[in-house]
Image (cartoon, rainbow, N blue to C red; front, side, top):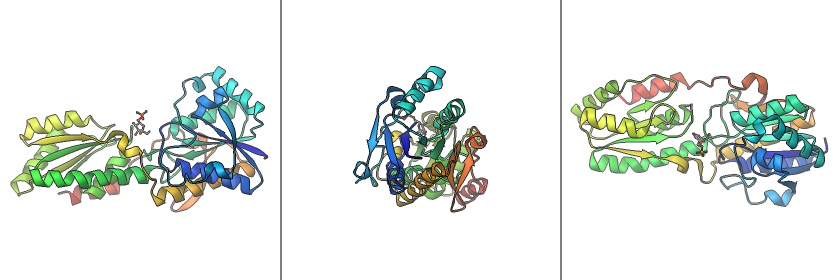
Length: 320
Ligand code: F6P
């Protein structure tokens, strides 16, 4: 393989730049050329791409976001859009593709691979940690630390004013960010889409805690479970407590990637290049029990990625 393409797609995630750097440098190390494709599949279709060199990825290892920019492309979901992208594959002499993104991006990559036969390897990059086939996705650890940092700050006000705080976090249909942040941040209740909750039970717990002298509480709500605003209003109505709501939003996705995410990104990016060099295709790289592994895209796509029940039960016990 002489020339590969690399793109980032879907929501940006901290560590994507570290991954681009790994892909570019590993490929160049092995004598290959790299084409950087801008704005995900949009740039792929519009031929918004060009050669990258060692210098293109200098000084990006510690930067959040993605230097290649990203997008969610509707056009790539059409046969015509993918055919246009294939035209550009021929025009730019791309022989293999590394797609850094989430589940939606991999669905596109898999269809493209099946339709046009171009070798494709996916690297999981999303803060949601909702992809089967890997214990961690690039960006999750940084986002988690961003949320825990916010909880620490909110705690100061919660304690000082003796308030109940509802904090809504991202994660799309996954409760992984909420669960991990809730456990790390000592939340009283964690609402995740994977587990049914009852607002009366939550309020009952708050009220009995209050009777015991607990004067402030933090409730973490995954955006896929409920709206933080609704939960906040319901708690106020049912308990009469001074309840505030904070929606962390895109603050969670930004900032300097953690060392964990950078190391993960470097290992996964390099492995993706190795797979392409070995003639592998239709794969996703991941990390399982500390080891870098590869799975068939077909096997992991759309597969549920359950939350860790042991962690959920533990969070309940510790927040008694
Ligand atoms: O997939 C990452 C993510 O941040 C989700 O947690 C969230 O639901 C979504 O992207 C937000 O997307 P956007 O940035 O397009 O509003």
